[in-house]
Amino acid sequence: MFHPSFWFILIVILITWPFAVRGQPFCMKHSDFVAKVAEEYQETLVGFGLLSDNKIFEVFASSEGATFTIVFTTPEGLTCPIGAGQGWRNVFVPPKGMKTVHPG
Image (cartoon, rainbow, N blue to C red):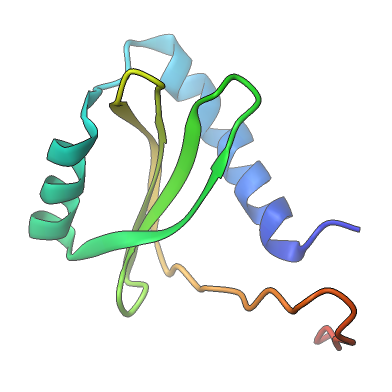
């Protein structure tokens, strides 16, 4: 079974993907992007993963979760935003074999 945060991220991608592919997404060097979101939104990297096409999927969020930005980074080092929002919450991923109780 997939972790609940997986479904949230998948939904965000499916909602924002048509907007990203309609026009050319605004991409920049990864180091420039990291500096920009740190300065303008106080966001830092909170999670990442490797996509099947060797792009890196990354989530940046402010320390209190007020804002977040979702991007992908190409193998060439270009970072392209695909979505942003408010109210980010980090989810604890338990170690394998640990019993968990889900609210609700």
